[in-house]
Image (cartoon, rainbow, N blue to C red; front, side, top):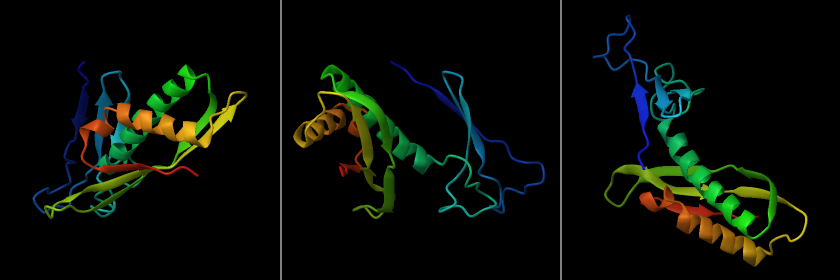
Length: 153
C-alpha cells in the first residue's frame, strides 16, 4: 500500500525570507483530494509567522495516533457485538528533550470517552483488552518511538 500527501508552500511577494520572518502557512493535499491549511505551531514559531487556526505537524501527529487507535478499537468492538454510539478522544502530546537531547514528542496520551448502547456492554476488563488490542494493531503507534498511553476514566 502506498499513501501520498503533497505539502506546498509559496513565499509571499512582500516577504524577505532571509530574515526568517516569512509565513509558515502552507497547504496539505491528500491522495483522496482533501486539502487543508497548515502552519508551524505557534508554540514554536510566533504569530504572525504561524497561524494558530491551522493544523500544525504536532497536532497532526497526535491526531494520526488517536484516529488509528479509534478505528481499530471500533473494529474490535463491532466484532464482539459491542455497539458504540459515540467515541471522543481529547488526545494530548508532550514535547521535550529526549535522551539524545533532541526535541521530540515524548508521549501521547489518549483520553477516549466511549458511549455504548444496548447489551452486551463491555466490562472494565473487556474495555482494557479492547484498548490493548487496538494499540497493538495500530500501525501508526507501531511506527513511532513515542510513548503512547491510554487513560480510561
